[in-house]
Image (tube, rainbow over all chains, first blue to last red; front, top):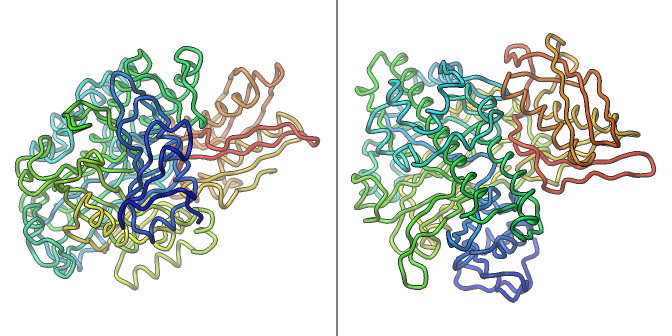
Length: 485
Length: 141
């Protein structure tokens, strides 16, 4: 790929497109990546990072993480903090799948203990956690009750018996972001999503059984703090978001913003997917309150899925979740906007951080992370492809420049259609089983699209985050069982 | 059906181009492409339920965008996979009435592909040509 002609190497892992690149840029764009990853980024990433740099109220830089690839409006991997008084909020800076995120749960089992039950576990998980096109969750809930989920997130699940207080403590925002206002959500969004609590979805969403092999522990002390203490310990990781509810909220507000952006607020963007409104405007505040409803729906979705995971492990091993050590490590959002306190121009101030395909990564000692992790920093869960593996990272000190943010996954390099031409889902399933990864999928076509070779190398991405000083590697996790939509 | 998937337009998602000699044809083609993203075996879809969609918009482009959103809405709201049975675009491409038929997702019987999150404005085009109309649509997966 050709890089912008004027891109500047700030360091081996930080690159800058200067303001002089485009007269409309309010700040420079900065990309965290090794040269190898930078060269592999699609050209649209650079243009999109430049477009974001033109948004009113943007502070410091328009950032892109090492797993960056083109998205809608913002690149995936994009980070932009806005001045809440002067700046805008943009659904394109959050994504259609609001609070798409990752959750990681421990077991006290070793791979040797799990191996004889692996197929049954995967089969049961596949039966019990609905995935793929047009599936309903098992939670019986009415449209009337659903606004409580939107307001309360994982707290609603706790009250219904689908989780523990500890789960909530180990979730970003405690599993419930404040000031979610269901009156800002359309009936259509509720109809699309109220029965989808506890469903994975499809695309790159998955639920995996993984192993922490001793040779893949990068930092034993921090791994221990996160509960990875046994050689070849088995963990469960999953990736999903706010389902149709969140998708509809994003769709609705994109329409609303497009209507008022220019006529009412004289805002111009050169990509409709970058539609925005002043954060303090009625439309901006309405979207922020509606987005929070989707944030809470996604926390509830992952909470209910964790409940199902516990049921399945209990059933297969004939032991209680407590006896199996099914304890949540953490849950992170990677499509979200939040008001946070960060240092800008030497002063601590409140900013509106958009993270789109990027993860908050608070370093040791920062407020907002569980007490148990205060000394070592926030766990960051990075999903890789189903063939290669995933990572548990930690937030680090000194990442204030990027508003304490790191990558979120590996990022695609091959289109879905190309992948489907190159791989066959059934062949892939067989080949993976021969390599010791048992996979069940609602769709062979969908499975083929998620082949490992369609993604960037996750090792390269996580190494780049470490070299860039935006997070550090703690454990590499290897998949042994996978369910996919 | 006059549509084709575009391989290299959207790395993480799916893009298609649809054509039609008139508005009715292009709307039918685009809906068929959207269904084909989710369902492999379209001929195997049984017509068990029917839904009527009535929409209006400022122009044919917006009308098509909203129509495809309806196909996605029914997939989530009622788990329905729907194809067009009758469709009439009127009022210079600003009004639509369609009768859609199909059935609920059945994982045992249906050969499913991938779920669609949203219709996007990314590279969205709708043009009148000498032969009729052509549109490019990118769907978020």
